[in-house]
Image 1 (cartoon, rainbow, N blue to C red):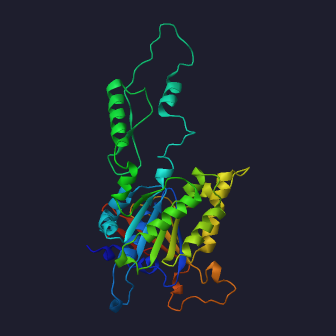
Image 2: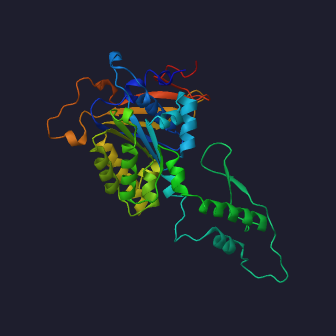
Image 3: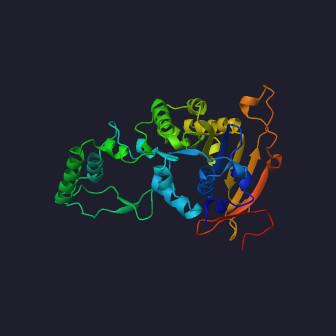
Length: 367
């Protein structure tokens, strides 16, 4: 099935990017994931049409994700939209920037090592004479990533053979010609953030944008930020204003035409506690700033009445007549834009095969 047929007809006008340069936002909640919606944006942006068909030539796409790794998006795109991100990456039309490498998966010099943490955890609180601590095998916990990927949990120090194997693997990696740098060079279109600094993030994204092949250089670029709110949690030194300033700086690049941002919008994150916590305030301010900057806002949430067998959730689309930087300059909205989508709501159902059905209220989700 072609990727373009995986976009529901009711959703097609809102997944299609506006003709003028703009910023878009979509939000999700804990019970209603927006991964399927982001995949449809990828499907629409990466599709190639001809001018005779009345469409654009498609877009280059740079996806920056702080929550999910490349294998996840590759599998979801293949399953839900029959989209081959690996092929598009090799052809120079798609680039992925892994934000997890600079976050939870990256080691910091100020972070205690796993061995030191293990020694602290295995030290008994009360000394018992002639007591031998029980030896337990390492547990296996699921990790974020493709199905079947597991990581060992905290436990006793590894045995001598395992430690020797780890040392051998690390020494072989150290003796490699270029180490991790050679791995990055062998995978064009796949980048990893080395730090949580705004300057490093800007440099990495700019490098990814400029690395598209010559044949795709004439295409405009769609820049997607997946869960940048996690960046504020990982690095409290970054303020919402810092990130929105980064968005504007990247939007001024000649090849970047659209920026799409995905942020969580759960009520506990938006309803400040008493007293308000710094992370709550930062998340709230980031979402509000991005909403004011956005030309179009799409939000997915669960049903207000509870769980239904044939309904996965509700999607609401809000169109703004003017973007925030058009206010006061007399720049009217493009005449070809359809204003009927202001405050439009649909129900949707995500099926087991990755397909999505979008329908009006009362139309029913089966069939």
